[in-house]
Length: 332
Image: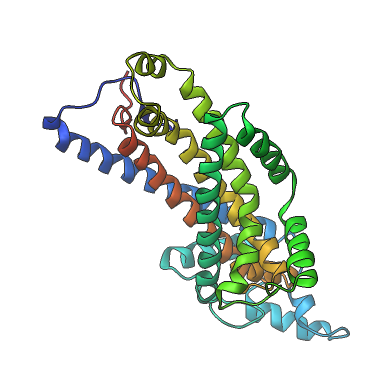
């Protein structure tokens, strides 16, 4: 249950709709302010860590370059200034929407990230949709058929899915589907055929996690008193599942699905590298290898922004799914 949400009060009457809308507005405003603080903290952390990795000028010039030439390049890039001055310039640029210029590609870092972002968005949406579309029904079916054949098949699948890292899954898919069976390409972008393998690789862990949580949530709801009461009244099992169990089980499933967005953002680095997918994950890896500070900072900030906004949307969805949850209510 997110902070600032209460679930111990009855639904508000219709006459309080305006108050509820005002509460949602206040809640979203507070969360957006918190998002700014989170972005500042993340940007500061990345700024500090990036500058501990070494001198980018040493990678940009050939071996044997005279020290005075390297010193002039550091001066041109502003790397010879004190760290606190570099940090101040970085924050000032951040406020203006300027995340700096790539040392390696000599282009605005934010522009480079935004050019690659559609590819990552395409891959991320496909993987997230696949994880939800396959994981939720599998987990719900396993929970309803506890101890049955569906449950016995689903449980090993969930365990294997959570045990296999993305890089291992990707390599196996390439070896079997691309190399042995010649069904799908192992790299590239721009078509549905090239999207399938990286989407499955990226979705594999999230799919198993969502399926496991869906099963647990359904089992927990099936043991509650209201389900036994509905069954005793002769309510059709299908109606009990669709109208009551799934609605109440949706909250923990949505929570896990939102948290898995962070796993997807982290997994795109490996997945895009394995399948030569031209997204921000591959850009981040290239920037780290070349110590391109500004690009690394831009990638992290864009990824953090996506995750924080997704968290805010999820908190609002809680109130939509369950009217008992009040957003922004901190009263006792």
